[in-house]
Amino acid sequence: TIKAVIFDLDGVLVDTAIYHFQAWHRLAEGLGYSFSIVDNEQLKGVSRIESLELILKWAGLEKSESEKEDLLRQKNQWYLELIEQLSPAHLLSGSLELLKKLREKGIKIALGSASKNALGILQKTGIVGYFDALIDGNAVQLSKPNPEVFLKGAEALGIATADCLVLEDAQAGIDAARAAGMQVIGIGQAEHLKGADLVVADLGCLVGKF
Ligand code: G6P
Ligand code: MG
Image (cartoon, rainbow, N blue to C red; front, side, top):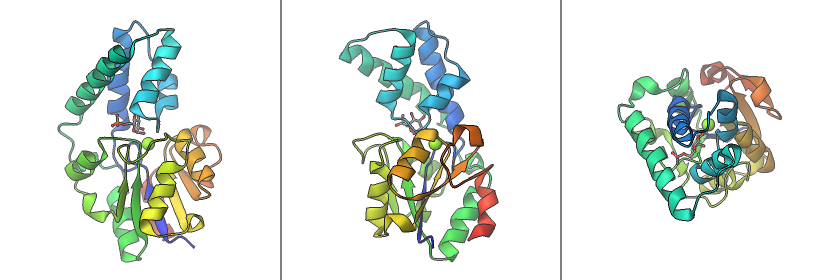
């Protein structure tokens, strides 16, 4: 039985994955690297610094630590500009319905996101009050597919890992949930979500399951 649901943020609850893509795309173009949708899939769920390291590797570029800091600052500045107008209208289909249903059923709710911008996004979209625990990019040392973010979520809720269900749109997140010994449902296309117990198109598909 599921006693807790741990939600990824970007691309699961809120439609922000497109803005990460746009900001990385702009940064990569500036470096003379043509950044594709296929590249982007590999960055989903991955921390800001590790995403930059991957782009530099693909582009065959080496940068000093201070240059990397500048690039990270630039990317985040563009990203923040893109999400400045974020509102409840950017919640993905079924987000609110599922959060409400879980509350109704007494199932605990945690966030398990790599993003350091998570709190602001939850506030702008009006859903921060649904969460019993928030584990974000400021709270973890290790990026998905390391299970740290989900293990910390279960711990904060006081729920055994086997009783937790993770909802994820990224392969790195599916792998992290598996490594944490949790059940995991992929949101999106099955080809990008290998190892999930189930893959559905959006959170709305899950409202009837609880
Ligand atoms: C999520 C997103 C990634 C993003 C990462 C860090 O995992 O899927 O695309 O790079 O969070 O987000 P941040 O807001 O801290 O740059
Ligand atoms: Mg995601």
